[in-house]
Image (cartoon, rainbow, N blue to C red):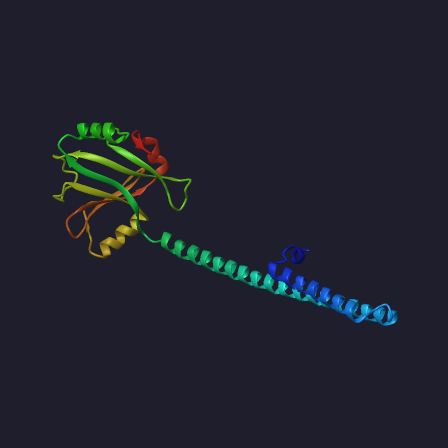
Length: 238
C-alpha cells in the first residue's frame, strides 16, 4: 500500500508510456486487419491484448522494484543518521561526565568593586538600569546549562573605596568564580604553587576561599548551594 501511494512522477511516466504503446498497437491492428479477415483480426487483437497486458505488468513490477530500492536507500540513510546520533550522544555523556568530575570553575559568581558611595551608586543603578538592589547589591538570577530547572546566581556588589576586603591586592575590584569540588581544587592549586590567601570558610549557602593570580588580582572561589542562597537573597534581578 505504501509503495502504491508514494508513486513518483517517474513512475507515472512509465505508465503513460505503457498506455501509449497500447494505443499504437491498437491503431496498427486497425490498419492491418479488415472485415474480410475476421479470424485474423480476432487473433491479432488477442495477441496484442496479451502483449499490452504483459507490458503494463512489467511496468508495474519495474515501478515496484524501483520504489523498494528508494525506500531501502532512505531506510539506510535513516539508520546511519540514528547510529551517528547515538554515538555522538554516548560520547558527549562520557566526556561531560568526566568533565563534571573535575574540580574547576563553572561560571561567574560575583563582581565586586570599589566606589566612593556604595549606597548612592546602588540607588543610581536601581533607578536608571532597573537593578533590584539590597544592602549587598543585587543577585542576577539565571538557569543552569546542565539542568534548566535549577537556578544559579551571580552577585554584583559595590564596596567602599576604604574597604580592605580586596587585600592583599591593590586593585579596585575582585572577581568571584563559581567552582565544583572546592577542596580538591584547592589541593591542586597548592600543588601547583598558587598563592592561597586564607583557608576555606563554610556556610550553609556555600564554601569560600581566596587566592591570587599571577598579576596579583585577588580571586574569590565559591562552591555554592544555590537553593539555600536563594532564600537569603533579598535583591534579585531577573
